[in-house]
Amino acid sequence: MEVITIGNHKGGTGKTATSLHIGAVFGLIGYKTLLIDLDPQGFLTRMMGVDTNSVVDTSLRLFDVDTSLAQLETVPLPSFHLLPSSEGMRTREKKLTSTIDLFLVKEALRGQDLYDVIILDTAAALSSYVLNALVTADTLMIPVTPELQSVHGAEQTWQSARTVQGRLNPGLKRLMFLLTNV
Image 1 (cartoon, rainbow, N blue to C red):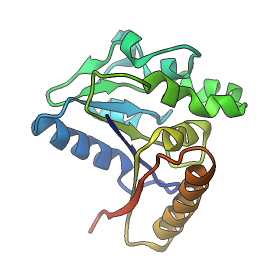
Image 2: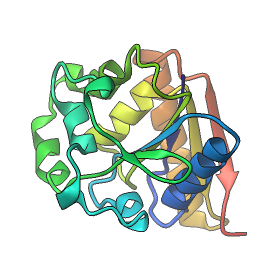
Image 3: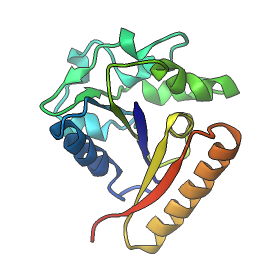
Image 4: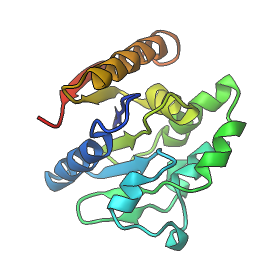
């Protein structure tokens, strides 16, 4: 299983579109692919037309202790599955305060064999959700637009990732930039 986190501390860089397109490509070429919407605003979930009131599970469940991905029901879409975001993520984040909380997603995904590729779509902020995504990732892809603020956000994201790589996730093997909106 490969876990790819898509993130940039700056908004408007194409994180969600990148997550969607990369996930679709992996699915179309035959990889069992899961996209997890870790953005409390739920842009990926809305882009896919998923009504969170009609789903059994959301990505918020990943932050319950002792939850395994195998226990969760994902939403099947044409080329991948989606674990949608939830409105409850906004309030739950305030409760994720301990160091162990940074490993909840990693633990929930541990040992799963349902998917070949898991893509974590993140919000434009350094949050407990973004840190969980970095701690879980094998690869970080940082979408960056050719604008100064986007480049600054990408630099901050890179530094955060290097810190996580050194202290919490030595398995974060690849950090890369993806130029978008060109």
